[in-house]
Length: 334
Image (cartoon, rainbow, N blue to C red; front, side, top):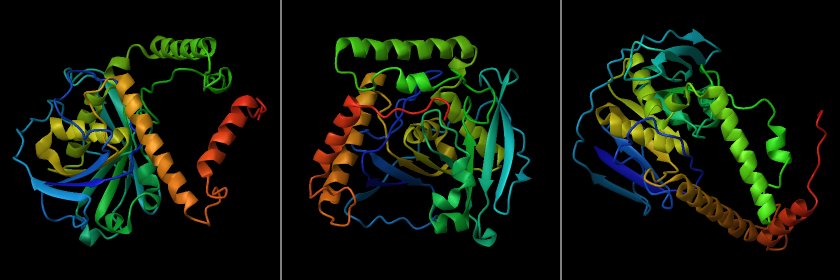
């Protein structure tokens, strides 16, 4: 197996609860934000590994993990438009009980534009965690380079508990109070207490409405869904492209089922050993680094609309302070 890594700007990372014991190793450190491509053969779209940011090395073949006892059905695709098909796939709510209750995953496939040159499928996940994923297949030309679109089917799904997959995590009916009822940038203990209480109310509502499935929508079960999709597609090995939390999901899948990995791109790696507080801190460092890069480039580019005479950072802070002092109001019946 060949590993190709290229540094990227610190990006968004997410966390999700794990449904069982976590694998020992999943993803790169969040502060380095390393995008990783693991290739199991040479028949792949070209990867530029000549830049100073890239490193190439070899690793020993990992121990093979057997597929779960669950045997997925063959996917029956229905044409959605000239390029995209849609389908559903049933997977176990609990992989330790393969004959028990089911999640029904919503899938979409953007077919390879050059069938004669088709290599296989790329499974894609946008992260979140908790974000639906089928749009990354529906609108694949807006996300992926033409070379990938020519030679791969882009297959996306709404992970269990999200989007059009069922059952779906549904916590509250009205989201407006969670964005307007409190100061999201608290400046004193009273304001901070309001934010904490609102977050607690949201969590309690989630558990009250979804308590029967919250233990089944974690990262490890979702990673097992990836392998179920691979087997339903009848592909011995498969490629994966994950963004943000999707990098942790993909790395978990690659750790659980290493023999099934043809290639994997993990864009915005997270530290799976960190707790939720540390993970958020790492994420904020990534956001801050990306914002600083924007300010630097904007200040050096006269065409940047937010240049503000070479000091976009000061202009941005002034904007935030003015909004904090006088928030923009909206019509609740908009």
